[in-house]
Image (cartoon, rainbow, N blue to C red; front, side, top):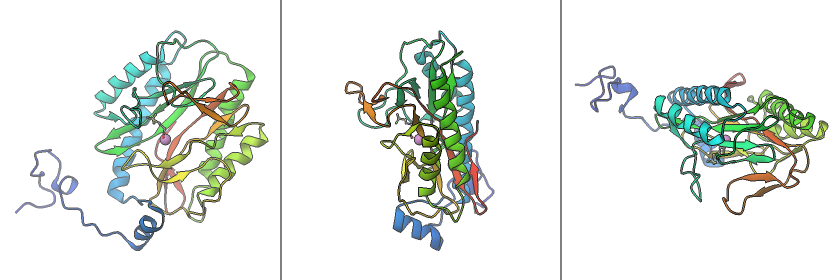
Amino acid sequence: MISRNDPCWCGSGQKWKKCHYPQIPVLDALAKKYLMHYGILLKNLEQIEKIRRACEVTSAILDELCSAAKAGVTTQELDDLSRELHAKAKATPAPLGYGTPPYPKTICTSLNEVICHGIPNQRPLQEGDIMNIDASAIVDGYFGDSSRMVIIGETSEEKRRVVDVSLECLLRAIEVCKPGGRVCDIGKAIEDYATSQRCSVVNQFVGHGVGVAFHEAPEVPHHYNNLQIPFAPGMIFTIEPMINAGVREAIIDPHDKWTARTKDGKPTAQWEHTILITESGHEVLTRF
Ligand code: MF3
Ligand code: CO
């Protein structure tokens, strides 16, 4: 008889217990409650291990893409590099083909007044540009999600401010992530700080549960809200504040149906991490 440590019957080369060993669908009481009340899947240790790996691959891909982002390089060239990097890591880029209309590229490259979902194209990066690169790798069926800003050369005080403020917003939001807190604490941490720096918080896009799918419950608003969902160990979600120098409103491009720009054309910035709630606090699964 096959035992747990034998190679799996499917020929994967992995141990049976790591591969097709039957998963007994017994959820503990808390996990049941979260699924029933909120539609939130609390992750078990095996799932956390896989999601941690997807997050590591996502971070490594972002390392390379950020290093390659220099004046003269087109965002399409970054997308080409992203395809290669995903293939090398045996990962699938989650954005490609996602949504309606199907997202056409493997990453988002959002420049200057583009809030999010900028589509790579033939425009070369220029001195003074700020750009968000957003990558989400699927590894072995599990998802990681992260984005970072890059500054091309010297930029304006206003652009530098949104880059710095959005990072500080993310870091402050991560600090409130621990059992005892609630999802609405994230929006409070972010909007309190952003407004203190004369910036606004986009409320048309939110962070999200992630891990077994690209976008899971809960929604994680970055603005003031009243979502009283208590943080529980095993919750995995993104925080990805989009912070504007001017007004908060986003306008979605009527032609490509993706590119979201600030209504007033002023600069905007975003950083994103995937966060795990632990017994004692949190673990940032993606990294800088
Ligand atoms: N981090 C972004 C999100 O969570 C990535 C969007 S990819 C796209 O929505 F395919 F939706 F554009
Ligand atoms: Co995301």
